[in-house]
Image 1 (tube, rainbow, N blue to C red):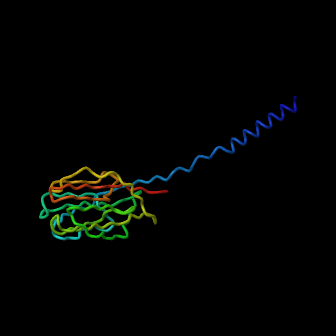
Image 2 (image 1 turned 120 degrees about the horizontal axis):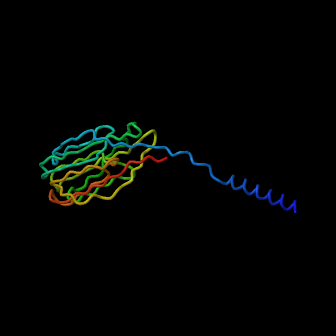
Image 3 (image 1 turned 90 degrees about the vertical axis):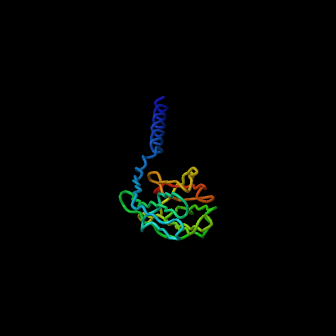
Length: 191
């Protein structure tokens, strides 16, 4: 009987040690990142003038407002992005192909943000967009797209990104009485 008890106690102790060995250690605390999108500049350009509007260095588009027809002015809002208080850089800027404004649809490619826009003429004129990639501490930042905005009348609207978001898309249909929609994305840091 004593041998059976000893064997049972030894088996129980071994099982307990095995169980303890299988319990995972607590994971290292995940890095915490504070993302800030700070409005820096608001610029007005005549919509039909054919001006290549671009946000200043290391700034991205976070808002647009327009009132009137193609002879009126458009306001662009540009912001800088900080992560843990450190400036994010905007690299690899490039322009999209031209498209007719009256049936335009533009959305940035993977993890890029709108940094500029060019338009010339009325709704029959052409529009291009400039986009760039966001970099911080040697890695490209990821953007998580949200839904498209509701319809906004082009001739009388103002839109701004919500906190932590940047502009990644715009579509427009018709003339100044037609509708415009926008798409925004949140800025995230992976790993």
